[in-house]
Length: 196
Image (tube, rainbow, N blue to C red; front, top):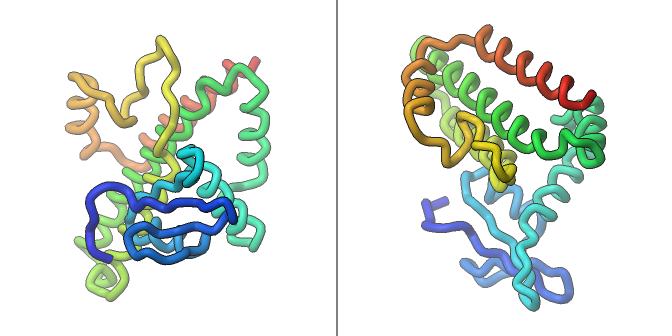
């Protein structure tokens, strides 16, 4: 799919049908999932009210995949997510998830880079598509995460700037999987303390 500027606008009609404004035809949830896997940003709006329905439809796509046995989210993670909506941790969870997914993406990207250097699989058809799909997945999972008033964004999240971000970027080259695991464990411990 050719690279387009801005998100692909999908309009939802009163009949709940979804209309692709670029191709002037109706699309399904599977079509939208395919656009996202191909690296497109998607925005779904209600035609009448103008409300942004993107989050609702992305959650529906995830729920359909999970119900078909294509599980990505372990049961304990889903349970903790449900709990986070009714606890004080609610304000921390979005930033924690965003940072965790970014750390996962960074670790996987480094692994894929290293595989490309030493692995002949990188020249196989579909290898680049797999990398783009992984990047699109993480981007979709971390986009739109709200910030907490009075709390600065966590390093690695969009909008973070300044010396700490620059130092982080230069130090990333030397990080390994063990460092990332340690950071994730520390974040989980902080979250656990906040739940008490």
